[in-house]
Image 1: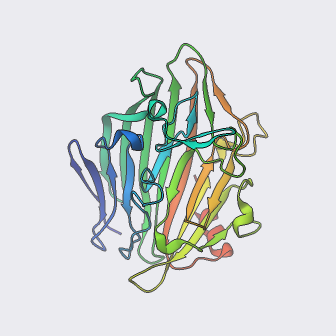
Image 2: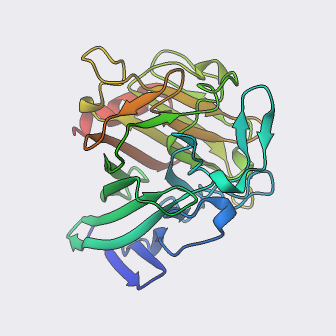
Length: 308
C-alpha cells in the first residue's frame, strides 16, 4: 500500500482515499445539520476497499442515525442523540427543548504520513439552550490499509471534559427504564441490506449478545447491488477496561440486526456514568472494515496480529 490521500473541504467535510484502489474510504462530515437531529460530526459514507458502502444516512425510521458517530442519548436530561426522547412511563416523546448538539470547533491536525491519516478535532457539547457543557478532543486515525486481506482500520479516541458546575450524567433509554436499549457513545448504523446480518462475538453469536460484555464484537452483512459480504469489527482498547474490573465504568454491547443493523460499545447501558466537574472521560475504540464474510477465528487472528 502506498500512501493515503486526505482532502478537507472547509466548513463541510474531510475525505480519506486509498490511492491503490481509488476508493474514498470515508467522508467525515462536520457541517451543522438539522437541529432536531442533534447536529454532530459523523462518518458517512464509509466504504470497504472494494468500494461498497457499509453505513446508512438519515434512514426513514430514525433520521438522526448518520453513519458512524459519537452520541449521548441521555445526558443530564439533554438528548444529544437526536429525535424523540425516551421518558420512563411515557415512551418516546417529541421534546425539542431537550435536543442539543456537538459542535465542531477546529481541526488541530489533518495529516497523512504514508499509510496513516490523522484527524484531530476539538468540539464543544451543548444542550438546547446553548450553554457549554463539555469540551471534547477527538482523534481519528486511519491505518492498516491492506488490499491483500481486503481490510482497513480506524482508531477513534475521545476525551470529553465536563465544563459544568455540576456532574454530567451519561445514561441511555435503559437507564431510564426501557429494556435492552442501552445505546449511547460510539454508534454505527449499518445499511438496510445488513438487516438480519450475522452478529459475532469471541464466545458466541446472534442477537443474544445484546447487553453483554466482550473485548470485541462484529457484524457481517450481505450487500445489495453488488455480490458479496462485508464484516465490521468493533474493539475496545485495553485501557477502556470494558469489564469495569479496574474501577472503570463497565461497557456493554448494544447490538441488533432487526429491524436494522447497529452496534455501539455503550458506556452507559445499565447504569449511569457520572462525570464530575473538570473530570475527563477517555475512551478508545478500533473499527475494522473488511470485504468478505470473516469467521470468528479470522477476526481473532486479525486482532491479535494488530496490536494497540
